Image 1 (cartoon, rainbow over the protein chains, first blue to last red):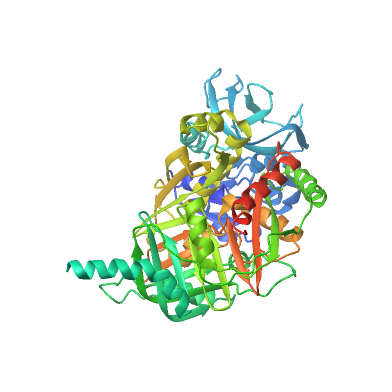
Image 2: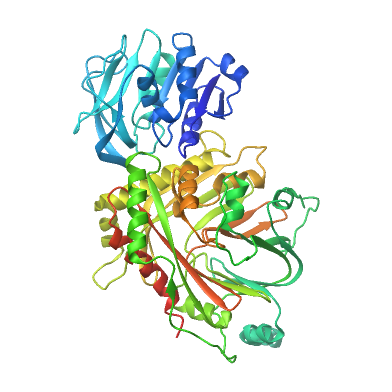
Length: 185
Length: 396
């Protein structure tokens, strides 16, 4: 079972819908976490959401508790939440992307996707991870072709993955495949 | 038979004049081909936070065969829809207009042709409207919301402005003129003893038949000129990054709202970013549909879809909270929904925009336009006025 932690976003159920194609999915509000569902889940997803990771200390706590024990995946805010919990600084971007389709490029540190592949993704974020960023076993694996902003990371040791863009958006052309790969990696 | 047809035509021709004379409450709703008029109401339910759940949960599905009047028709106001999904609104200036009203009609009449009405009553029309937020205060709110966008609390937010005046109008006359100048697919009017609503809403929020459901969000409006045809309008929208981003956001949000209640994999973007042509403008619209999950009830659908996201902003809850903390006046019907729930469970609802609420001899027109990261305050303020103008122009 996949447990989705919803940060009151208007895209969370697109994520749920997409994940439901692969496994049973349960979804609860971040402030109303069901402990037994959380324990039962094999995968935990941190949803997109408004605001910044510092607004969601409960989610950071869950991350730290289950890191290395369960597969954890973050989307947009969830992506930032994981990196924030790993010590990254989350900062405002000069150019803000809401409803924007842009191209990302897979770099050579990716173990799951082919290096050099470019594809179109949908973005909804005001904030980004401040770089350089370093945490053990974490690699930034995709970047925006134009701005170079971090778009995805992999931690294949602890099975932790994240996308700054939205794989569930209709603007992301092969989102289903991305999700399939990180669920089975 | 021929005589009967002729007689029926004659009755229909004078129908609006007669019903006006009779002072009976009635509702008119645009259909694909013409208009439906509902009247002879046997029940009137005034909704509040306490009775809305019961109203939505009641089942009338014992019958096998339904009549065309086996439905409740009416509206949910904005505040009621907020409260239904657990979003609170702090104390606001209010005219104490009901939060929602539904009627059970016993008569339904279909008009295939244009509505005919000869104005006889005395109207007292004031042409001057007062706006509740001037350009300076608008700019202030605008700048505040832009900061919220920068910090990621909202991605798109719609600032609402209100135009008001004191007039005694004949709603049928207004509605007939409005349908002539601006025939919109979700147009409706309600005339009751103590209030009336006239609307040329273009936007369908819920169309539910059996287990099929669809929504048709609009994001993007272009004024018609002689130089612009439909194809050019499409090019304009496609090449305008700001309009495209706003529209994308709404599409993903409506996909999300349908995904709450639909079978995984069934939510489909049926029409992506097409242009619809109206008398004075072009709209940029998408159509999204899905198949409802087995156990979903109408209350779940209403809670998932309302208030309609395209007129609020995104993400919905965070944006509603920002709006509700900002707005000092009750929105009443504005950005609520009008439509019907049939006894067999089918529903049709619009989003109440481009509308006039007449209550206690005051006319109220609310409009809103979106703030995204690259919006311009002056442009959006004027956009609000353009949207209100089609209605304000009726006051002459």
